Structures are given as structure tokens and as C-alpha cells.
Length: 308
Image 1 (cartoon, rainbow, N blue to C red):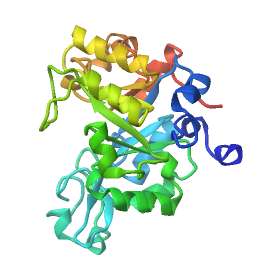
Image 2 (spheres, one colour):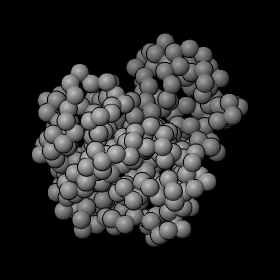
Image 3 (cartoon, rainbow, N blue to C red):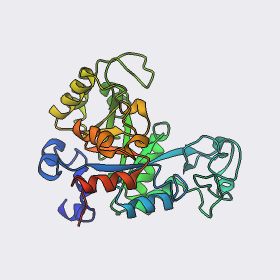
């Protein structure tokens, strides 16, 4: 195990799965709890096309710890990296991804954030995972659940199983029943929110305390993504409970209803008021559309982990 771990940098080591370690004990020994990990939403999309290999490379160079990317499937059942179900916004093509083949997608070029064409191509999931293998980065694979078996097969093929993160909002018992041991060696983060607010529809409203306690017992997750619409006592109780489980807290700064109004646009001008609010609430992981500015702020207050 020591030989295997030596191939990866700290960010991979501290997020290793519970199959080999008690996550709680491992984190308490190895993760500097006064530091914050940075997640770049769709990569460095301000400088390169979103969800492109260059966007991930730019994020790595910047010092980002995790990149969130999105998965779609083509007509011939190939997994590619793209957020939208249609090609129109981010490429020079048109139509639904599910209506075209990978060969067609390979003829296209990606557009940048200003909708201008670039020389970048749409990567497949396999190409993206091969690119990040062994690098100081992890990928949060969004929209992966509909293709779970295929995603895991590609992660196994590329040897990147320990570099991917999956998230979801199913109850622990349902998740275990559906996946069995499939999530062994995978970082899985449950999504949770105060019981007076839900950004997602649920067939059954689950008390968040029960939800967290069940996950702690069945999966012992390394972290929870917490959605906070309003800065309330219920939100504080939720964060306190997660900390009591020795788990990390992931907060999104992408838009106001995810972080009680302390979003990136405001944080750009007043970082300590808004990103600082997340840190004071206990965030160990912050997802942002402004990774360069967040990293600059974290370094200014001694909160950014920089592996030497």
C-alpha cells in the first residue's frame, strides 16, 4: 500500500477510500484541517473551453485540487465530457448528443466562454481520465449515475479509480441496495441540505439528521456536499452534525441559493465576507467558478494547501 500511495500526491492520498483505511482515522492524521481544497467548476473555463482537457490542465497549473466535469453519452454509447445534452452552446455542431455518433463529435471544435471557436476537441471520458492519471488532481464526475457501470469500467481500465469523486442524494440504504460493492475504492459524497429546503425533488422527505447518521453507519463518507439556501440555525445544526462525524464539508459558491447568498460574484470583490463566511461555517472544500481568485484569497490567509 505504501508503494501504491507513493505514486500519488497528497490530494489523492488523503482521499483514499474506506476499503483500505478507516476514513475518520486517516483524515485526522493526514489532512491539515485548517486548509481548504479548491474545486474548479468545469475547469479553468475562463481561459479555455469548459470541460476540455486544456481547462483541466489550466486548473492543475493554477493549483486547483478537484475539477468538476460533466458526462454525456452519444448515440453509439460513447461517454464524452460535456455539460449540455445538446452540442449547440459549446461546439460548432448542433443537435442532441444522444442523436449523433462519436465520429461526428470528433469532427467538431469547442467554443470558449465568449462563444468563439477554438482548436480544442471534445474529449471522451477515457481520454480525460488518461490525461489526469497520476497528476495532482481529482475529478468530480457529474451526471455519471445513469452510466455508472460504464464509468467505473473506464476508471478501472485507466487506473484512475482513486482519482474520481461521485456525489448523489439517495438515501444510504437505497444507494447500498442499488450499488452493492460497486462504490468500494470510490470517493462518494452524499448531498444534504436543511430539512426546510430542497433544491432537488424527493419522493420521500428525509430528516437530514437521519440521512447523515445512516450514511455514517453504512458508508462512513469522507465528506458531504451541503446546500445552504439561508443562513439559519437548522443549517448550523446540520454542519455541526457533519463535523461530529469527522467528515469534511463541501460548499458551493456557484450561485446564491447554494450558499446563503455568499456566491462567487460577491466574493470576487469581498472575499473575506463571502468565501470567508464558508470557511467560518466549517467548509473544507469550496467549489467555485473563480478558482484563481479563490486560491489567491486562500493563500493570503494561509488556508490553501500547496504540496511541495
